[in-house]
Structures are given as structure tokens and as C-alpha cells.
Image (tube, rainbow, N blue to C red; front, top):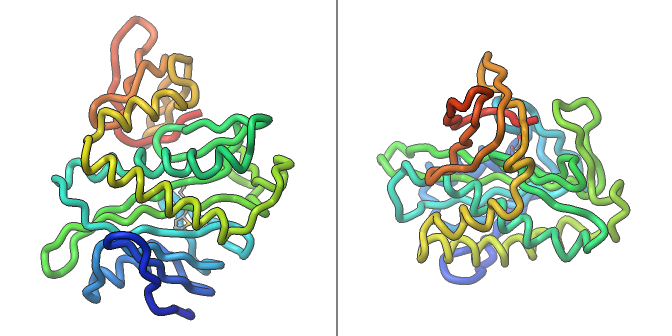
Length: 250
Ligand code: BTN
């Protein structure tokens, strides 16, 4: 692991760069335990044990973007889950000018970024408590720039395959940092309602029939909305509603 000194950004934010770590999310947790401060972006060129949601692994060889943001948000812990929507909006703003008008970006509930219906990025949001009792959140983001995995649950792509003018992970990172800080500050100031409204404008299959796998349950229905806490509201055949807080949408 090669860690650099923290590079100051705006306000409390700062950047730590690594050639290689196991997982930027795990490194962020270790830093929090070691007394790090709120606002660290941790960027690694590669990860040896990159993690996805639900304990899946995340292929992390050089060329793609792997970054985590370590945060101590000044809100109740129940609201930490809103951060994955805040981050998804920042990713959307980052990628939109890169992919241009010829490709369509969508946000797949809860944490995926789709490019022309294929997964180009994913967010792993984790909250944890350090031994001093402080509550933290870490937002981990992976964006497929030069390569993508083949054997995955949901079809994947990368910017290169989509025929997008290729940009380096470093450029994508710098734009993401800019948009993330803006989105985070707006969330702190205005709360979740504007984030929810913006997310809905780009939600994948919103208003359409979907299948959700949640634990051992596979449920079909119409994706009516995301609620005030970002949970998925599904209308089942017959009209009953189900509120789902975790799962895979297809
Ligand atoms: C998912 O779609 O399952 C979420 C993938 C999140 C991957 C990123 S890469 C940077 C950070 N470090 C990790 O180990 N995971 C996240």
C-alpha cells in the first residue's frame, strides 16, 4: 500500500491516493478508527479485495475508478442511507458530459449507475461505529472505465466498450469530487426531498414492471416510487403495496 499525504481540497475535504489497497472502504474504516477526520476521499489505482453489495466481490484491476469518501454526517444515523442517492446524483453529473447525448444514463435502485441499460458503476454505502462511539459513513464508488466483469448478475459495460471518448480514472475522480461536494453540501442544507426528486427524474424502470430479489424473495410488481427514506415502493398485482429497503432490481 502506498499512501500519500492528504491533499487538501475545499472545506474539510481532502484526498488520499494509493497505488494499491485491499478495499478503499476498508481502508477508510481503518482511518476512522485511527482518528481520521471527516471528508477524506480515498482513491486507489487498484484493489486486491474490492467489495460490492451483498458480500460480492468487485473486480478492481487498474484502469477503472475506485474511490471511497469517509464522512461523519451531522444528521441522525437513520438518514445515512440517503447518501447513496446523493452520491448517485454526483456520479450522474460526472458521467453525463463524458458520455454525451448518444448514451443514456440511468440510476438503478438502490445504488447502480446504468449506461444504456448496462451497469457502468456501483455504490457501496456502509455505516459503522468506531470504538469511541462515533458514527461514520463510507461511500464507495466503482466506475468501469476501461474494463468490466463478464460473469455478473446484471449485464455490465465500461466507458471504453460504450464507445465513449476515453478519459482517465484521475479525470473522472476529479470531476466526481467536485460534484460530490456540491451534492453533499446541498443535501446538508436542503435535506432529502430535492435529492429524491432529482433521483426520480433518472430512476431506471420507475413506473414500470420490475422484479426485485430481496433475500429469498423474488417479487414482481410495478415500481411506483421511492419513498421519503429512499425505500422502493412496489405495487403488486391486485394492488397491495410492498415497501422494500434492500434488494436487487431487474
Ligand atoms: C456494487 O455495485 O455492488 C457496489 C460496488 C462498489 C465498489 C467500490 S470500488 C471502491 C470501493 N471499495 C470497495 O471495496 N468497494 C467500493
